[in-house]
Length: 231
Image (cartoon, rainbow, N blue to C red; front, side, top):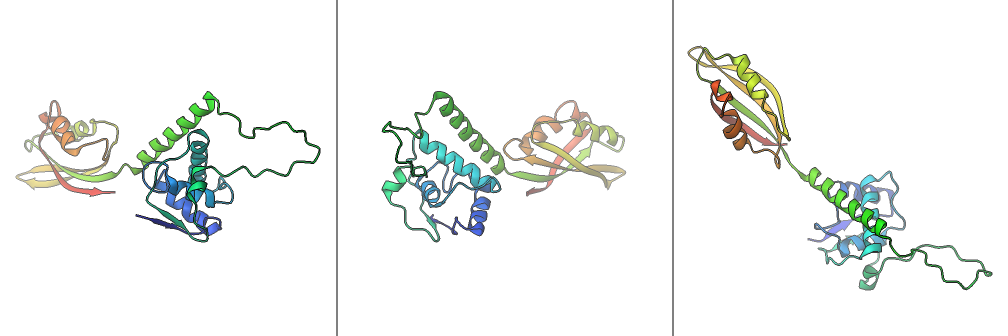
């Protein structure tokens, strides 16, 4: 689906571009494409460091163009206040904005960019990988979960039960507030909140492999999901 952006050479348009790139590595899709080059060539200059996301994206596209170019077709992008970008422009990075040389310069050829060194290529690849990893982390969802943890009987030490439950630690799991609620016949259950990173923690596995296994099952008779909400 085509994307329409405001005039990126205006302060308001550049701000909107920066906000648009907050959760994206590229203008469209999951790889650099002609859509990125359309916006890249529309910009009159590199975004300042004030626009963190736009500046990161611009440097990344600039590095890709210097190394290997961009081949993705993209989904189509329109930038208000700019002329359509021809294919020839897309395929070739814009020339550097250099000042006119003096009349007495010699005839020696000067390569303004020079051949990319192996170190520079490796650094650019590492930056690209870092941007992708950062994007994945941002896109990873979180959920808030409320669990009912029921003891075996009214003689179960609920303090030890809670300590055992909170003792389960893993990446992407954070325990929250808890309270005791009456069940009946003098028995109380523990209700406890937790937040999880969806890509790292499965609530079903947490219950089956940790909360309902030894040694915690000495205290826990059952564990049920009361509420599950995406954050």
